Image (cartoon, rainbow, N blue to C red; front, side, top):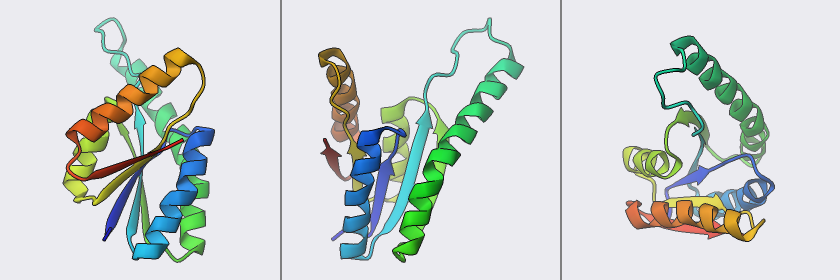
Length: 141
């Protein structure tokens, strides 16, 4: 049923919990797992120097590579083929673009339930992904 699962990972506790489901599904279906973390908070204005943006991008890449490391190790121990990526951009657009490019059968992401405002923003990202995705989307709470 699923051959390639794209797991959108933001480093949150909900994301870590959702990864257990991603692993379970990958094992059950013999699917490849792709972990994607998106660096979204880059400056969009000309006042920021190119060097400053490059530095922020590098810090984001290092941060997400660190939080992805444990996920990759878990998948490898379970015998699951896994790839991990970090990309800059708008979260929903980037996730959908990578799902299209990699021909994902499923996008899986965790939803953190904090404040009412945060839930609305987080769920809007999930709704945007689900609306534009080329495949099934599973949002875990």
